[in-house]
Length: 236
Image 1 (cartoon, rainbow, N blue to C red):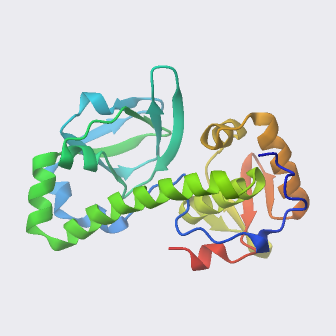
Image 2 (cartoon, rainbow, N blue to C red; image 1 turned 180 degrees about the horizontal axis):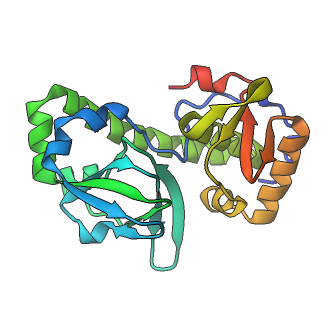
């Protein structure tokens, strides 16, 4: 869908997302659970990857840093989401023995805990808090995926980028002057295009319209966004 398909951009007209897509449920409470006691510490340097096929019965908890996840096929490698401290990933595979062709790449130095599926099940059975957190993580991913699919059908590229940036601002944002929120890590137009399945020219055109609408800007290489529709205060 072309960036200008819906005329002038109007943030007030966007239906609030139930779950912000392209980010993964990050639960700070997970960092204080007994799962940590059952895991082996792993460190990843920038650019290092984890392949799900190498850990068919295990999952990971992110202690620090940020990882990007990729869906892999024979011909493509698609950036799907970002994982933040408190995120757990591959938990469904570890619990249900359901294989997935996924890769996770460190976007900065990361500390992880490798947790076996058996240890995770034991922790969930022993502690209702852990059970709730893991189920919430799985459910969030299901709903976030649905939100991505819904957005691709009903929102134009500008609206999808705006919601994407608000989601990142929710996790990695800090308030600056006049209601702007600065996203404190570098997100490229190529990243946005890969996640939205559009080319960089389309992303650039959409961003120019968001700049003109006064809801997105760029300063010192980092994006800033304004929550003029109050979406951050009303979504999940």
